[in-house]
Figure 1 (cartoon, protein in one colour):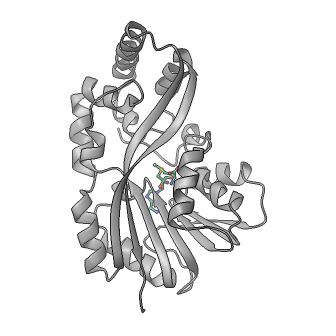
Figure 2: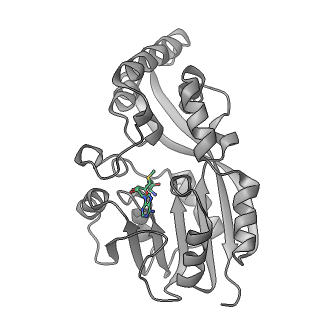
Length: 262
Ligand SMILES: C[S@@+](CC[C@H](N)C(=O)[O-])C[C@H]1O[C@@H](n2cnc3c(N)ncnc32)[C@H](O)[C@@H]1O
């Protein structure tokens, strides 16, 4: 069953980690959040909203359709420069030309049709502003397993998850094409390895998998399948002698676009 973003037990799933420093440096090279009004669309528990605040954003508006996620975002982000708003990313209710920067991370694979979100983004972004979309393409999801690339093991051990990812993920060229049709300018795409976290121990890694934290795809496995997956990962990492300080990195695709004219 797909993840239920409205369930209380998933409340901290997208709040309980901090963004990696390398990712923050990467962001700053693309667009400096200092002094900007930023809308974090599908903000979840606010992991990236907090990055923008930490980098000196003038204001951050975090929008999500899940009251549970927003409650956690609010509880973990003490700042008077942030505003949490319940709503749909395709119909935000924000005024025209509200933001300097729009950010969507791990959201577009939950949207089948990209036209409504790309139109809404153009409406609420100031002229000259930047849209930044970070998500995984089918190719990103199917990269081979390596000790730092845990998701590769998850995919190789669970072929049914591969089918789900292929069905729900947007291809790189399809997103660029949809942006072009929607009137975006200076469209670029690039790939990026983001360190999700570093596990102190293998035990910590296994517990997070069993809790399905921050990986919506694991909700498509039954408890029995999840236990079997965890045992296989335990076997693999133990055999390779990887027991402590285990980085977990994912490959992403990032699309950027600029709004030129209204
Ligand atoms: C995988 S989480 C990503 C959270 C956050 N962006 C991050 O990267 O940590 C996806 C989030 O998008 C939200 N979401 C999905 N579809 C949405 C929609 N149509 N409108 C608003 N939020 C949506 C979910 O509630 C969830 O919090």
